[in-house]
Length: 372
Image 1 (spheres, one colour):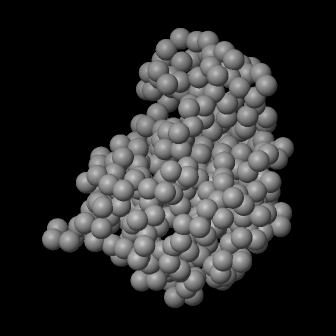
Image 2 (cartoon, rainbow, N blue to C red):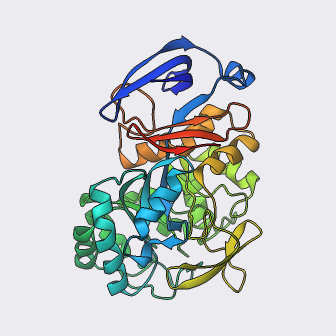
């Protein structure tokens, strides 16, 4: 049992939360306002554990390293409040993607003690536009349903990033959705009309909104315009380097289920220096990660910092919490994660009310991190 100001689906309560066998069994307390929560600096704040649907690495490890890399990544991000994540691949030769998925499959089946739950795979490439690679290596390829389903059979693909203008991509979306994948538009030079057509076929999200996609122009709205006009869900990277706070606020007003991701690389949680991002060498410095030509290449962001950044640009704490947990869970159709209520997994973070720094992290009822 743990006590504090608990964010429930009905708002904050001051009281206690208990769990058994990994799931919440009881929440007792009296309702309080968010203003009261923030004013009471002595009582900790309990929020749902963070859910990150776009994670390439952390702690010096990269998902494309295969081997034990995913264990290190899931442990590193648990230290920053992430209780569930999608291990995200890079564009690479097919054999390398297959090897990475084979290494990820056991982690998707069983949560390792002390680590975040790996919910599955986010396949970010190779079915993207060679004209919008961003930091992806130049191994983009045309999509083929049999090939994607074969990858899905190795490890569960929960999200797939697709450029809808790539030949054959649009026609595959219904079958991919039917196989249980969420299709996101990204790394794309598509027109507004092509992006809207993809949404009509069943695509349901956008990968790191604003980044590596055709931009908004008032006579050519592009993929960004399609997202702002039509999307129910989209990712965004709130490290305040990838997207200006003003653009984040515009997206928040336009996209009801906008959710935050880190796009974290192996450099997350590590000192400045050189790291791997798939086949690319990237450099961490000045709070970011870049290729040699200066292109942003993922991030060093962690989800606890994402929460603090959202609050810093003006979001109420409850709304910021939803953007780092609830909306991602809803997007994946997870009714028992991203919220603190009886029957849900006991995924929670305990924060200092004054600083929003982590004190404790619990994943499925297990203590996986202790703050200082």
